[in-house]
Length: 326
Ligand SMILES: [Zn+2]
Ligand SMILES: [Zn+2]
Ligand SMILES: [Zn+2]
Image (cartoon, rainbow, N blue to C red; front, side, top):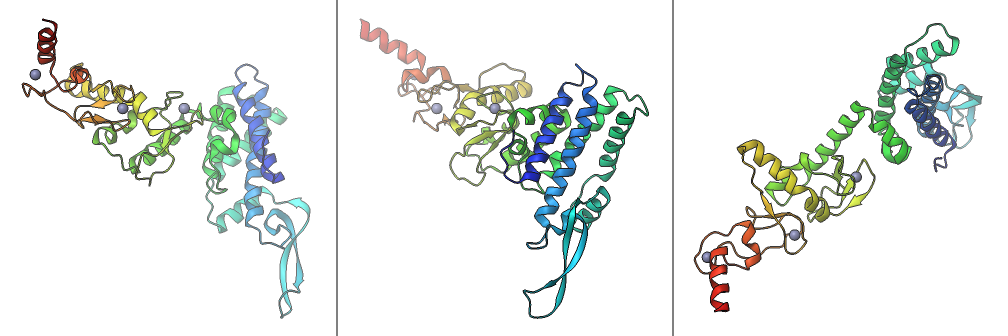
């Protein structure tokens, strides 16, 4: 299911994946709440252990990962110095994980972790008959633990879990909101060429799936950066993203501000998207510019519909047409 070579990380991810699938099916089959809590809890702990393994020094026999440790003569240094190394097969317990994380300044919501364990124990031993919704709520919150922990292990959550499982997580509204916030922060740092685009960033969408969870692949790029979608995983070009969504975005704002329904863009004769801006006098998607703003004959300002007359207003274009036909 997952392609990670590190067995700890691989097991962690697969546990969480199974837990996510179970979570999705809780409504259909309430028995899934046990397997979901169990798998999610196991997955989170494995993820934590993976981090401790990464933090352990080389040649320390994974010191931080092991419950017990022993001292050993460090033969590599001149002095007789004892170093601590991991001992045995048992791995750290939850209490130790919390202590290590505290000293490494890795913040995790330990209360939440405890409540998940409690839920798991309760269902396992039938102490109380927990409501499906209560269980779901706790699991949902733990998805947050996972989501937030991703940055400590330097993985993007969508890449870590895989698209299918990431989607289940995204369906949890709070995670969606957080991810959306991240995307907007990214879009805000892009140096957009046009003010109209800069003002519409929260209305831009993925041309492939129409999700708003999009971000610029390279925010520092001077020219148009490719756009990556965090919902469907597809990458698209600046041109296709702007071309397919800018008209809607601009018209939406214009209508809200003025109450008038009037198109703010016209069909670009170059890229054929509805993205030609009369304000910028060029296409916001492909940057093509017609090079004329007013009628060559009567100097009347051209409207968007008159783009097709190649520099003439519709009146003059009509007059010329009739003269030609006479
Ligand atoms: Zn998409
Ligand atoms: Zn264009
Ligand atoms: Zn004219």
